[in-house]
Every structure is written in C-alpha cells, then in structure tokens.
Amino acid sequence: MTTPRLVLENEGGRSLPLANPTTIGREEGNTLVVRDVGVSARHAIFRREGETWVIEDLGSTNGTWLNRVKLHGCALLREGDLIQMGAQRMRLTGLQPLAEPRPLGTSCSRCGGEVPSRATFCPACGLRLTTTRDRRALHAALVVIGVLALLLSLALGWILRDRSAGRSSMPHQPRPHPQIVDDGAQRQEA
Image (cartoon, rainbow, N blue to C red; front, side, top):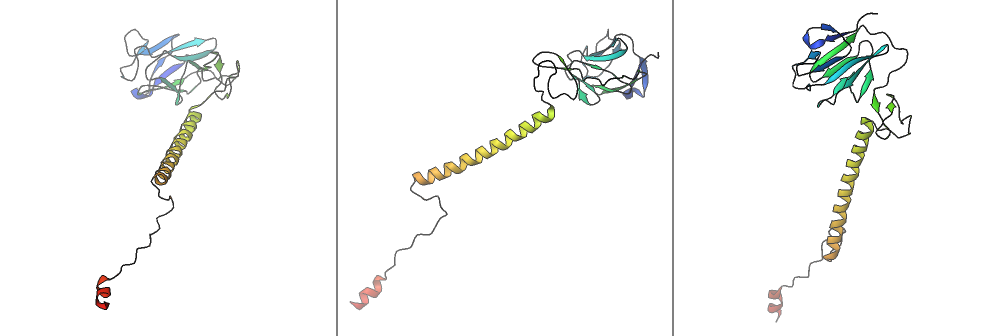
C-alpha cells in the first residue's frame, strides 16, 4: 500500500507524506505549520480510520473546504480531493479508491447522527435538512414579500390619508370654475 501524500499547490507542488495523524495549523507543534492568517492555530487534522483517511476541521475560524464545500465535522477522503484552508490549497494523492460513496461528514442538528451528502432528511431522526440553496431561496422570498408588504402599506396609507382629508382617492379631476362676471359691462348698461 502506498503512503498518501498531501500536495501543496501554493508551494509549487511540494508534497508531504501523510502521517497518522497529521495536524495542520499556524502554530508550532502541528505536523504541518502553515504561515497564513486565514489558517487557525490548530486548524484541521488528517487521520486514518481502518482502510480510509478522514479530515476533520478542529473548530477553525475560517473553516476547512473540501472540494469547494465547507466541511462540518469529519469527511472521508478520496484520491484527488482538493482541500483549502485560508489561501492554502492542497490536493491528496496516493489514496486507495473507496467502494462506497462518502458522506460529507455533516451531522444532524437534532440527533447528531451522520448525514450523507445528498440526503434531504436525517436517516436517524427524519429531520428535514436545509441546504445553502434552500436558505438563499427562502431569503429571496422573504425579501420579495417584505417589499410587497411595504408597497401595499404605502398605498393604503395614501388612500386613508386622502379619505380622512375629504378627498377622493381617484385621479384628480378639475373642479368647474365659477363664472366670472365682468362688473364693468354691467355698469355700462346701467
């Protein structure tokens, strides 16, 4: 079995063998020390579990990204996976292929159970899971509803103001002008 390697893409492709465990962070004492302000002091850990390797974010401030998806908890790793911490990009090589699809390592907010990457509901407790896309769609819908409510309240305010002032809310119609009588013409007749 070959030793998996971590290829540091920001450092010209330099690669390091993965030890079990491999910690990454900004402070001394980590297996791999990364001088990047976007990387936490103890950012993430790689470790072997049986025949597979996993990565776990250690509560970093800016997060760990696996294949452009923010990592929550642990995730199984595959050949060619792209990991990003701060501005540092790393790629994994030398991993054995997995027979089964991997979960993203997310956990259910209600029961804490592991949730597969494409799950809509938690398999343990049945909680409906929301995705970033779901939250964005909900946010957009709430913004539209808020704007419509604001416009409706403004229109109703104008109508009520006009009625309380004794004016009609209908478009302005000119009032007939009183007849102007020329007093000079009446004086001449007299």
